[in-house]
Length: 202
Image (cartoon, one colour):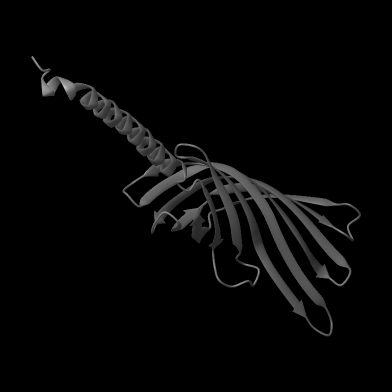
């Protein structure tokens, strides 16, 4: 009796089944890897500029910042800021004042909806100011400060966002004058400026 045709097709069917199973495993692995890679390439760093005002008469300033994600919803932030720049010249006297500083902090974020985040955290800062109050009288001010960052960030997409931020903070200033034989003046103060920022994620 001749062998059944169905039995002769069994090896071919098994080969096809094994090939299909292998293809499915490889495809699933590649798809999963691609998904994980796509998640890993989400922006984890941010740079931006913040402005508390758009004039530079000495009463306002701007800052540039860099943020890097350390873990989920937690970012390390470094901020370089200018407290103001002013210059006045006349026949009798030349006056100038410039201040700048650096701040390092940590912020924790919480999503309020798909595009809006609230963030808050501590920030340590140091400010340096140089100016003159007369032709031969220079002043140097060093002001360490501690503040607490409070902000809202709205993302337009995965690359661009804006924020509104305030940093209630306390500072201690040490003032030295060139014509005072090393005299140092001490004062303390509080500030609570509001700034608007533009952010690029990468």
